[in-house]
Length: 471
Ligand code: FCB
Image 1 (cartoon, helix red, strand yellow):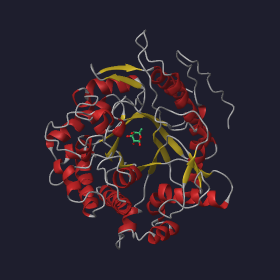
Image 2 (cartoon, rainbow, N blue to C red; image 1 turned 180 degrees about the vertical axis):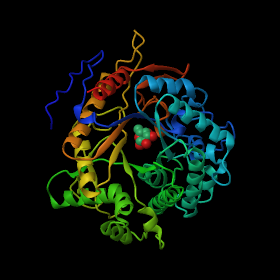
Image 3 (tube, rainbow, N blue to C red; image 1 turned 135 degrees about the vertical axis):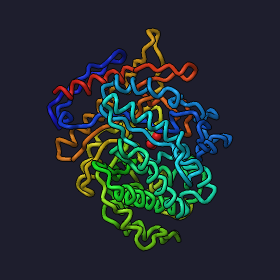
Image 4 (cartoon, helix red, strand yellow; image 1 turned 90 degrees about the vertical axis):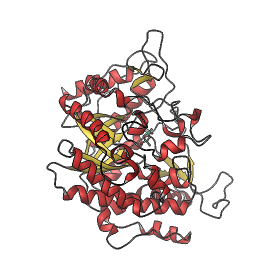
């Protein structure tokens, strides 16, 4: 912990920004978005449908029947939006490429009109002195590839590597920072096991195959990008991570925390960093009759060296190994892994606010995996509204950002190699299964008019960046 005082956050009005000395030295400040959540222009200039276009049409799949057809209309407003980013004084912008825009259908040559859009975005960013931080895959798989089996099918990994190479060939002369996947856990578990994200399948075994093929796709893409030997290439992957702990010191709760960590963190990071799947996870999958479809050479590809690990952090979790009625196995005879609330305030997503979990997580990642990290997403949804004065007084979001930046600073002070922070999100946007109902932006978007308004949290972030940089 450090002596820097946290600014008091008044109930309304703007909290004062203060410099964060631990984040002043070469630290990268940014804002983040993803293609399907903001671009709109769903069927323009040769873009083909993604699994999200399809999923949004499934009755009941997305709140309000919303979809990304228009979203923030960023596709048509890119220059103004980059000006807005520049006005926030950040030095980097994290965005994703829409695979079905760059390579319609997920096979074959690049689409020049799709590439032209990203050329424009990248060139405008560079012109304003902002570093582009590109994610290749933020969940919008071309529908044709899902029809051919999706991520549970091995071929999708090869298709992804081709797409990565073609995207890098188009933009790699100007873009140094490449993230292969955003949150493979969400793609696999929410998409193929829980069925609450596209493509909406519910099959745990398929989800585990998806895990391996996502990681393989990452590894093959990483090899291709490394082979192109672009000067200054900074290669990474982004995972959604939290700090998990046992709810009590009982053996059952510690066992539950271990299991949660296995399927939430180690199944990704062990192969990525150490080139092997965790033995306990492999054994437990085996007990369920599931074998990860690993072939010779896969793990070597997956362990292609990374320059940076992207961390998306929203909350942390405590786990119990017993159900509320005390039983240690669930209805299907499997060990119970139950989340136990901390009893903290929650965001509009119903996620508990646990900033110190970010410090613990970053220190754990540093200890167990040793990679430099960047927080590629952190932020909060709150039900904010425009006030009579036209502004958005989102003191709760400002407090969330302040507390989490403090947590990053504490991790840095304790020795973790954390190199940057991207606020999620630049804009209110299409929040997947929640549609437009949940607002994560530090900039408000009024969807009727597409008017953008920097919220109080956005102004606070801008001031914090400026003051910290000048420190
Ligand atoms: C992450 C996603 C991002 C956004 C935030 C709230 O899981 O990467 O697109 O939905 O959560």
